[in-house]
Length: 377
Image (cartoon, helix red, strand yellow):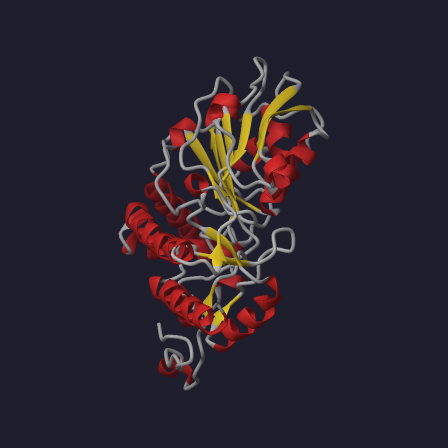
């Protein structure tokens, strides 16, 4: 990949065009690996001699069944998913899972435990309250969601159907670096950090993740659910919100988001070629460390998140003088450092460092931050 400000001539090979690639720090939809985009471009009109694009294929065709099966196999390999778990490729985004989880996992229980660590936890809690009594076992809201509550302080129910956590809060930049032991089945929204680090899938009853951070483009959601939990949806659950229906049909009970599934498969192949999840986790650690070190070494920038709970994926930071925010963002854009504006509920800046964001992007950002501080500090 060329650095911002230079032209990447990867397009010349097929189309004689040039394109300028920026360093994209978007929280989602987020950066995709250039190698994946190039391969998708090369296969766009004719997928492996089929004479058609994947976008035009029947999801029942042999070609697409092969794509789907390979993608699932690679995903299982990357996360070491045990055989007693189903892997589902669904639509509706992670937000739909806020309802599907209670509809499928409550069974004859009437209560579920939730830990509130930020915006996405708050939304999951609000939706779950439509279906059951929600016990907020712990919340960091009083501290503006700047940390993960100490598990020793959690007030867990004895009769909860499950315990729900958001492993990484995209907006606030708070992440679980260790997952708790709990008597209830553990459910995790891993939308913004799945495949960024190894996790022991066997510790979870269910994991769900929207694709648009580390998996692929928006429009696809991956669910990993223990098979013994299937078939217990509450009465009246629509068929398309029943995990068992999707598992029985291999995620094809209706037309799935085929192109997003195909692109996710390309990302899985790319991730394997990069050395797998352990290798990408080491890279992510380096990227985050460089940015946090730059923030800590400065009196001009600050991180609002407690040090031990800082996310490796989403790094919010503020300037000493908020009046300089627009100037900072304009200068960043000029350097090809894009999508750094913080969420409106937090303010300041936010750099998302997902798997496809190269280490060079962080180096360029740190260089700019230091130059900006020298000029305005």
